[in-house]
Length: 220
Image (cartoon, rainbow, N blue to C red):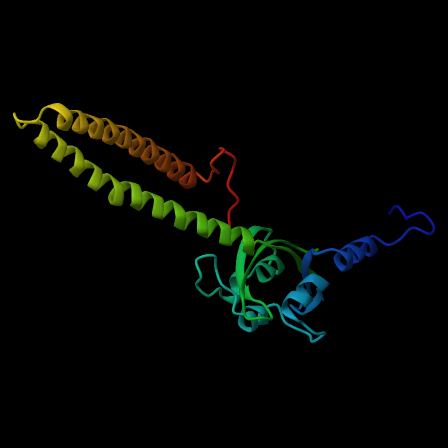
């Protein structure tokens, strides 16, 4: 085995320093399932002390949740899965912070050696998830507004204009006013159709896991 040069720092030191000086979230356990390391960022977020935790205690202690909001059993938690030998990628879990607020963490983890334990790195995606939820709500409102609140009355207006224009006594200023109203209504109808197509395109991109510019959407 190649030995490190004299005076070289152990590999673990830069990682430990990075965890202490940055906001990286990390947790590790040994082969018996005991938590052996929790990064300062996670300790601060959840106000954890030096008490020893077990990997399966986390789901109960913090009320871990799946992305759909349902409770996450201990066996599904990223650390337990990683300790069982699974490589975990981009798994999102929900849990309550020290203030009782629901936070969402994206987790990536891996086993250590052959049953020697596991580690999980986390990233707080709460703000991103809230933004996604707000965009979803706004998209739904726009769809309802265009499809029902606006299109229906506009269609009624155009039908009423057709009835009025069919009357033989309509002439002069009234006829010109009706023509102007009809032109504006037709332009509004075209605008509604364009917005409806835009909403539908956004929905297709969302279903395909893409952002409005076509880039892959982050899964949360």
